[in-house]
Image (cartoon, rainbow, N blue to C red; front, side, top):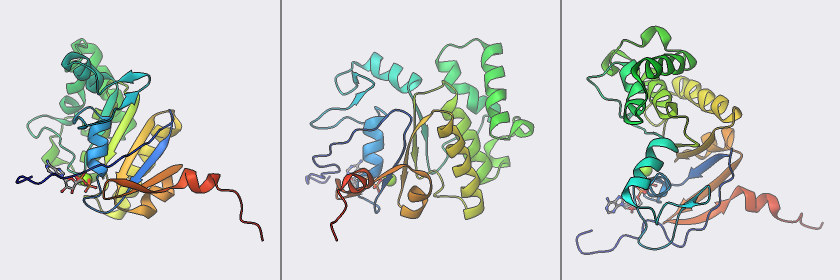
Amino acid sequence: MGGGIVTALDRLNLEVEEGAFFGIVGRSGSGKSTLLNLLGGLDTPSSGSVEIGGTLITDADTDTLARYRREKVGFIFQQFNLIPSMTALQNVELPLVFAGVAPAVRRRRAEELLEKVALGPRSGHRPTELSGGEQQRVAIARAMANRPAILLADEPTGNLDSATAGSVMDLLRRTNEEGQTILLVTHERPLADSCCRRVVELRDGRIVFDSAAVAALPETPR
Ligand SMILES: Nc1ncnc2c1ncn2[C@@H]1O[C@H](COP(=O)(O)OP(=O)(O)O)[C@@H](O)[C@H]1O
Ligand SMILES: [Mg+2]
């Protein structure tokens, strides 16, 4: 930036198991969003590689990468990022439109997803007519529309009060229990500790803590 080079991630080496509820914590600017964007194929590293389920996405051509983003990953953001002119139902249907799913089928799937996040009766409402927690539940339903293998959540409760945040986290927890791999980014360590089976902490683009490494340490002899 401005002629200077920002090293957002530095010699990072990480392996995430299928079905994990994986937490990435760290202060603002530590590289969390950059890591998530690399995993989601939204950004490419200047060196190194990202492999998902045996496919090197860092080597993939544009079409393969577009297909990867459409079919394999779902994104949830702090700002929800719903399309304001569309109803909840249309927002959830949108990834299915891009995937070429027939109208009747995608409508039914979107309705089911909204039922699942307890928003069935609000499906005709636009984002401005929904609370923050409701908007985030719509965003989760949208992220799940194409049954992605991986759910990437970047500070999903950052704009919610604690009670509403709790219900969004419960929803993610249930989704993970059904087999969904989830990577959760948060600057709140207790939030990650409360739901994630493994937590890594980033500082200046490097992993400075890994709960799996701590668990693997031999017990200190007394
Ligand atoms: N588009 C960008 N251009 C230049 N530097 C960036 C850009 N986005 C983020 N950064 C820098 O990269 C580092 C990591 O940022 P980010 O991944 O957004 O951190 P976090 O999500 O943990 O707050 C920070 O130093 C940030 O200033
Ligand atoms: Mg961030």
